[in-house]
Structures are given as C-alpha cells and as structure tokens.
Length: 426
Image (cartoon, rainbow, N blue to C red; front, side, top):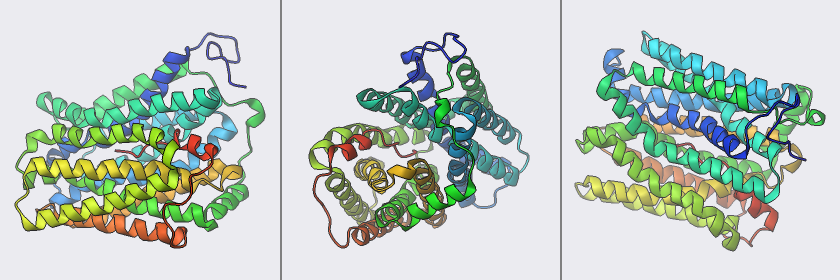
C-alpha cells in the first residue's frame, strides 16, 4: 500500500505527487550534472593543475564513474536498514561537501580523489530514487512516474556541457564545482523539508553481510545475470570512452572547441528519444529481439564509422551523424539488457541490482579508460574501441544465449520491468 504523499508518519503535510516527481528528477540530475558539466573545463583544469599530458585529463570523468560504481553496493542495504530519508540526506550532503573539495583542490591528485568520493556519494541517487518510486507508487502508475523521472534525467546531459561552458564565460573552472555544490545544497534542503520517509516499517532489514554475499554470489553464478551484466559492461565502455574523449576529439580533431556543448547535445538528443521509444517498441518485439538488434546495429555502425575515419578526412557533421546512429543503437541495447540480467533475480532483486551496477560501472569505466588513453590526436582509436567493445558484448550475448539470438517474445511482466529500467548515465 503506497504512502499518502500529503503527509509523513507524524501527520505533517508533505509534497504532492507532482512536486515529488520533480524532486526525484532533481535528485537524479545531480549525477548527470556532475558527469557532463565538467567536459568543457577539462583543458583549463589540466593547465592550472599541471597535468603533463592531455589524456590524463580524462581521469576527471573516469574517476567519478569508478566512485559511482563502488558506492552503489553500500547505499541500498543502508537504506533498507535505516530508512530512505536519512541515507538520502547523508549521500546528498556528502556529494555537496566533495563538490566543494573539488572546487578548492590545489592538486590534480586531490581533485581526482574528490571526484571518486563525489561519485560514490552520488550513487545514493541512482539506488534510492528507484527504491522510493517503488515505495510510493504501484503498477502502471509506478511505470509512468519512473518514465517521467528518467525523461527529465536524460534531458540534463543535453544541457550540462552548455551550462559548464556558460559558467566558464564569466568565471574559472572551479566555479562549476561551486555551482554543483550549491545545487546539491538546494536539493538536500528541498528533500529534507518535503520528501517523506517512504520505507514501510515492516520492510526494514538488518544489515547482514552473509546475506549480501550470498545474493552477490547468486547474481554472479546465474548465466543470464552474469552474461548480460558483462555484455552491458563491454558496451558501457564505449559510452565512458566517449564522455572522456569527446572534448579532445571536438577541440583537437575538428578544431571546434566552442561547439562542444552543441555537439554533445546533438549526439545525446536522439539517444533520449530512443530511450523513450524503447518502452513502446519492446512491448511488440520483446526484450531479446530489441536488445540484440540494437547491439548488432551498434557494432555495425561503429565499425563503419571507424572505416570512414580511416579512409577520408571526416567532417564534423558526419562524425555527429554517425555518433547519433551509434548511440540510438546503444539506447535500444542497454535498457533491455539490464532488464534481462534481472530475469532470475526477483528474490534478491536489490542485492543483484547493486552487484550488476558495480560490475557494469567499474568494468565499463576501466575499459573506457583504456580506450580513452589510446587517443592519439585522431578519432580512430576511440571508434575502433567502440567497435571492439560492442563486438565483445555480442560475443558475451552469444555465450549467454548458447549461440542463439532473437529469442521468443518475453512474458508481459518482463516487458513492464523494461519500462522502469534506469537509463544509461550520459
């Protein structure tokens, strides 16, 4: 039975449904802003903090992903034990504090440490927003609310680099972190005043390391779970490499540094539309058919793009067009693979989701770092890396499905879960 949003356990009036949805979307935006607002500032960060090579600047992005991956495994069990609201408040407060630390960092090493810690803190939003929607809403209403929350969340990456660029016009790169800290403080206060405790008292669980270990072991040994988790990890490497490398590619390969914001938005826009359309298409064609077709398309587009870059002097408009096609395919892959990975995990859904998130994020960030660090002044290493990571993902899917692709359409319950799967971080 969902809680009445108009009051908490003490009878005080809280936010209505619309304000709650806006607040949850605002919480999700914390993560997207922290990833993408930094992109235009990477050259200035490297210059001021004495980074010897341009490729090391990518660590500002990738360190955040590593922290985000580790953090996911802790916040869920803590929220199940102590409640959603205090754990959410702690995570957002830490996010705000570490944003301030990054803003005053006097060395590149301290900045990277702050980014890792900030990512681990921001993981509280990914874990708890989904949990709180499930606490507050049921059935079709839950799917509708989750879709609205994630729609707002996915629009943010289109705006964040432009926001970062706008700040750089009037201040230095440190001001971006200070703005993020201010936003975190506002969200903390808003959620503290308006968001009720959503965890039902009867659902509180004790912290049990043995139970968590057993759940993670089950997720790691189930063929469907680990197979699709590793396939997602491989594909996610392409996304992390893109976020880490795009500033260098646009500025150095295409000599269009001032266009980084519009280019990022142009590539992200079709991906947002595809993520929205996936929940409609998957109901007709099924998770496997949609996801497998998306992955094959991703591999083919990435391979063709690498060939184009090798054979001709690629113009910026063509790079953007082919990247749009790549990430539209990516969108049809990731949401469905995430749902398929949870197929047999219903009894341990929370622990399994955390395990899969940790593996996917840390693994994808590590592989993305390898691809990003191979940047040589051209877009070719990045494009070859995307094609290779997609091909590895396809091989893992073939192993998982024992050599068979495009299976039968799944039962309705699986399709419903696809509609509330978290989108990829961009």
